[in-house]
Image (cartoon, rainbow, N blue to C red; front, side, top):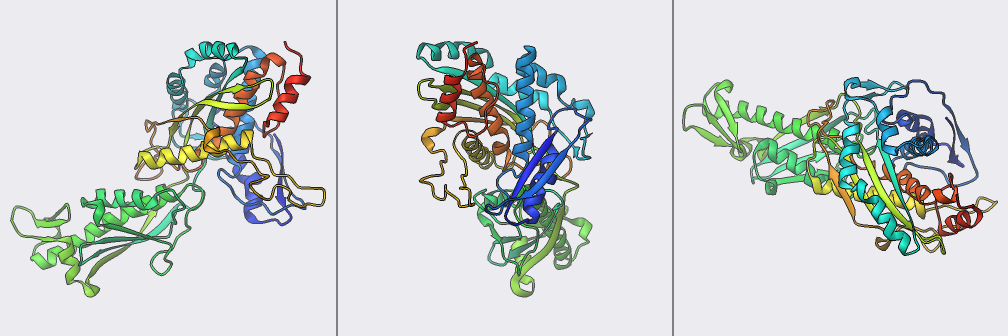
Length: 450
């Protein structure tokens, strides 16, 4: 695998890590490939400096593998699912160390493919293709299996949890929400751990006087920051038991905690968590806790899409899109589905619409959304997202895997494979993204029908 990654005019750590580190981590993807040769260069150019975007290195790596899988399947006349099944890492091989020393702790890759095939109505594709042909449209199907690396070396996060005399529990976290809904997920975790209502939980993020940490990057917020939140609730209960034992004149071992109340076992003597807080200096019971994950997480899954192409204009429409995603234990399914939706939208954008143009002097030409095309709501189909937690993560106590970048990793090769499947009768085997109407139209006009 030979790769050249442009860093722009200035080399930052992020710009170098993307091609040199993050891509190779997942280059072999969900397949049992032990023999590799990487020739990777990061080069400076006279364009804008490069920073991390959703996926950061992983979309490029997975794109190569998934294009290769489909190209190989077409050349040897093999079902695109069958060639993947033959090469998948088997459940018995887990934990699995890939060619660059990264260890996948869990996964059920063939299961994800089977489930996605069923939900996407794989067997009904031929009938839909026939109907599209009646309308004069080309019709194709794309398939992608992907894996994502999340969290990196930032597997530790420290939080502060306070129970106050006025009946509030306040979590201070160093992570920062950017639309992921972390406040909701953290509130759920703390509320469940303490056995109290979510309406009593306040989540404060980004206050460096109250909490420190690596922050939100690399889809690490839940499985690291969430772990810290759960640990803080456990520490809060332990500290509250000690305080209750003193106030109720009992041994700590005889104090039981349930739903915000501490009781002496076998008696009616009890005290509430917030009553204990009222007796504390500052009328708050506080703990500072650190959550640690044993390593990164490896979310994965299967995407299947179907596309229509108008051969007279080259316009491509994604008309069906189905995903089955393994993000381990799901805390809030709606939040995760939203993350997958957003990532897939960006993946479709990368495949069909988005392209940065510079002139020969390094001047950005596509400097506004008048010139830089992103997908709008009307460009996207209804997305079918299914979350499968049958292979929970084993490197953190809550069993969750990152989810924020998965859609943007699985999306681009899935759509491109679909377009090339539709164009297969014309002998088109390779096109560079974005697959704009002009490119598709020219490919059709210049190719000979097989």
